[in-house]
Length: 382
Image 1 (cartoon, rainbow, N blue to C red):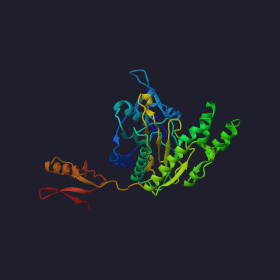
Image 2 (cartoon, rainbow, N blue to C red):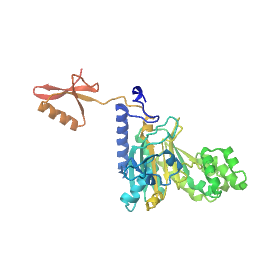
Image 3 (tube, one colour):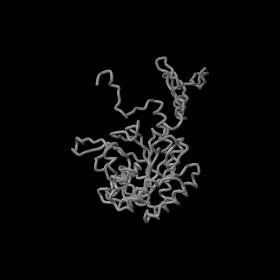
């Protein structure tokens, strides 16, 4: 690297300048305040942990996305977090270990070895909420509702909620040989029928046909009424989808509902309902989540769990930018005690007061403090 390009940042790593940084922070505060109103307690896990804590069976994707380094104190392998869910699982299982239902929320940067989507960031700001200790559909419905309210508070509209249940695919794939299961799972994720036909050549015809049919089982409400009879005993999974869709559809009639029975995102650790929110002209979900019971088992405390996460930076790309830089008051830079008291009162009331230094007035100032008859008063700038 030469002197002339020392300012370059790695691909996919961004910095936030004053305007965008203010928008991110304002949105982060607004969304965390919303989640606090639902009873979710803020936690702030560390940026790095030992890899055995971060990589707790959430799938190969998290493993590939995690930067590793060696702790110079202990010699043990550490990772920079690529996801915050393992850290919250550790907090629930070990740091707090409360009985009953626990609700947590978080917001923080994560780091990925590679972007997860075209032109995506390698350092997204993840914000999410997780509920531990309740295995009921009511808990899933609460988390889905909170996800939709979070997107609404961010200014996102035109949402379609994609619902699935990994239990359906799990029951089908369990009938396959171990060596076939992972490649078939990958092909189902791509909904690639040709790949499935090739992989399942030689598998019992009925089973192969059921797996291939699964790739095409996606659509609106009518999907649940025209399912093929060969899926097996999936009545409980379908009943869960119908119940959740009924409640969410009643609460949020403006949200479109879509069902995808081959949605296997997080198949290796999700255990029940999975859900994602999409908006028009976006190829990736703006928020997603699901049920991942027993995620804390590696910490010695298996518990039912469900949650969701979103990327604050990605949300801001979808809403109109506020062009108002914020109204500010200019103040002379001198040591007058009355002036200092007036500035302190204004700042305590929430006003932005900026000192004029070296004869420079900040462009955000539309008012000024002026001494009139021995009193410092605020006047509009001409």
